[in-house]
Amino acid sequence: MYHRVDETFTLPVDGSTKESGELIWRAQNKPNKTFPVTKNNNKRIPGSVASGRTLRRTTEANRKANRGKAIAECKRYFGYRYSKGETKSCDEYPFASTAEGAKTGSDGQSPNRHYAVEAMNDRHNSNAGSKLSEFYRDQRMLRTQDVFYVKLVNPDGTPYKGPSEPSGAAAQVNYRQCSGDLPQIKEVQRKAAPEQKFLNYAQSTASGWTGGDSTYSVDLPDGRRLFLFSDTFLGPENADGSRPENAKIINSSFVAQSGGSLSTIKRGSSSNPMAIMPPTIKGERWYWLGDGMIATIDGRKYLQVVFQEYRHTHDGTELPLEFVRNVVATFELSNLKRPIWIDPLPSEIGVAWGSALLPKGRSGDNYTYIYGVSNEKRNKKMHIARVYGKDLSDVKNWQFIKKSETVPDKWMKNEKDGTKYLPGVMNEYSVTPWRDQFVVISQDSTEAFSSKIRLWSGCDPYSFGFWVDNDEVYRMPEVGLWGSYGDPQVVAYNAHAHPTLQSGDRWTLSYNVNTFDFSDHFLDTSIYKPRFVSFRLVPWSGGTRSSKNFVPVE
Image 1: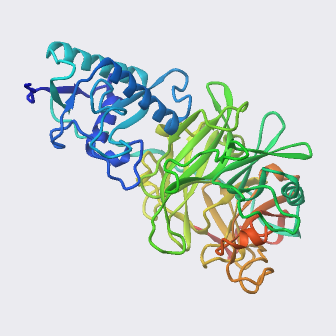
Image 2 (image 1 turned 90 degrees about the vertical axis):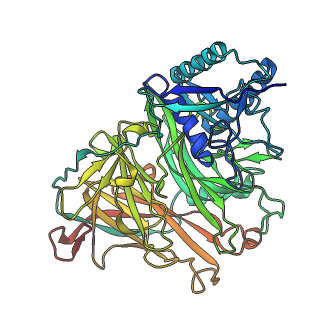
Image 3 (image 1 turned 180 degrees about the vertical axis):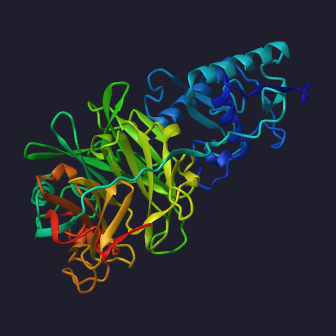
């Protein structure tokens, strides 16, 4: 049987096919940047001349099977209603009409993941599909005999070099004046609410939350308060304060507070629980969550939560993991068990976004601020982005602050042009309005496993300073050999304030406690639980922002 190898489907990438063309380009040139992901980054997607592997048109039955598999993967990676207002569809490459498609394509490996899917502009997908159908018709491509390559070109016929990146400045950074007051911590109270409520719940639940970290909180429009947790142990707890050896742990959960009661939100069943965001590769990759907020999209309210994906490095280090990417998950308020949309966020420079969020309603300038953290092991730095309005998934309009000693500071269009700022923050922190200023609360990362929680303040949500020797909020007493557990394996981390728990000038922060000895989680359930501390934050009478002991961070 004769197979033609001289046929090439040439797709012009223009305003009508842009997103489909970009998917094909990534699949051909950066396959391991596409979805689904593989354990060893070993995707080899055919169809380009460079790959040396052609595509071959297949049967209608196989086309339907390929299409079904691609749609299932789009739901997995982009949310079960990835269509997003019926404006998006699931596109795949190699095409569903080829034998190399998502279901039928194979090079002898199992499972077959040598393909790419993406939720994209429905019109772009449809236009590219129409051009492929014209190619089949015009070249009289037989269903199971003829092979072909795929080539991308610009509208003028020159080779397409890939997606263009945003560049340049979006706006000048404007700084404002505010009162000269400095914040002072007073009347610190340990074991503040809702700490005891969580302890009581953990002791009584059969299969709900019995411990977790991250501990962000969001007030829902229906009056419930939602606490957001990353790694979560599930019940029950034993009466002696231990945990059953078969206790389940998942990578993310929500706990809803309604009046005086708590309830755990997760996927799966009691016997087979699943994280709110299940791993893309079980045992190899997982999501931890960042901050969340109520978003407004097309006039409707949703819950949005930032998640960071990590993967195992298997390098034998104490923390054998590395950051992969950021996404924002959007949930309907009537069903918080799984996101309807999952949108990729900027992830190219290793910044874990979502350390803190400052929504439009609290920023004072109609922007939502997104805070991230650099990937140093110690003395981590803050990164700052913003987007107009209340939708984190509006990624094309994100702006990134660029601070400079020689030219005016600017908001940049590309994440790569943003700069690090404010050394000493931890992976999780908070940025909260205070009087006519903004306050950052974070564990100190300038020293490893520090017990110190620090405070910075500033007139803008992107410019801060601290009062020398008066920036300490609290010392976490559980840490290390001299801590309350008397155990060098015990650490505390990721302190941040909760605006949801604020009442007048009384604030509440939480921090997490953990241990490097995993077996201790089963011997003593008290370790892996958040602590809550309340305090009054009032103007300090002993100094102002103009004092020489107040240090602005440039």
